[in-house]
Image (cartoon, rainbow, N blue to C red; front, side, top):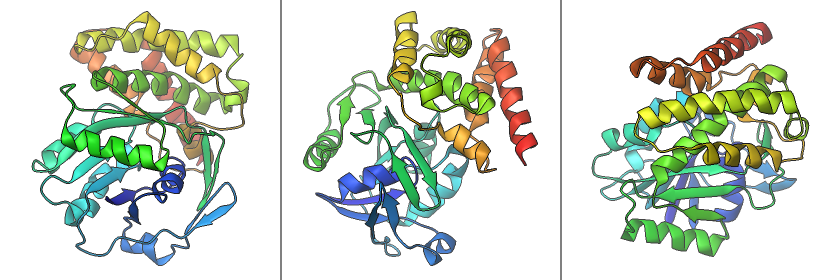
Length: 296
């Protein structure tokens, strides 16, 4: 398959190291980024992945950028999309696939996200602490098995990409959203690595209160998240015992824009829609914004 990836950072770069094994892989970059491109360094190894040529079409496009860059990403990939090009978004939150379906009605959007990934980025240098490079959850919106899905599964098998196919991918995306709302927000405020989160009982109690609000809002949206799903999110974070940092904390430390409004602010907005009170998420959103402002 001719695969193109946009966003070779903390999420995309570890995936690139695997996709180079059995695919024709290219990076999509705007002209400004392309000028300074010198390859990527993952765990000390240098990878000089070629850049996509203007107008060249892809069989599969994977987005691994930030939510606030999605509109720009859509513009950048447009020239590489043909009818039935498969598009996968590894973006956080619960909205990116809808935007991609609207932008590319003749493409094939497979719903997906990545979890169990602990990775830090400093420029083009990425240190990935996860031995398997994270786990990609993927599936069709309606839960069916399609030819396009099978093509991606075959590619991942050849490239040793760790994945899990779900017949209820919408719920799984909301599960990852719940995890992000709780732990990205708290890690950013407290400036704490995974190693310092897994046994911090006060932090875990605060995370549980956040999770409870997300579950209530998800149920109102027709997504059947449960307390068991909440415990799975906590267990996932407790399994990390390394010096990795959440993406939100890395953005705060590097004075970059955060995805805060795609996490707890989204919960607050949906809470208002359904007349559900979300005081914990409301406060976490404000605290992250205040923290980001103070770091400028």
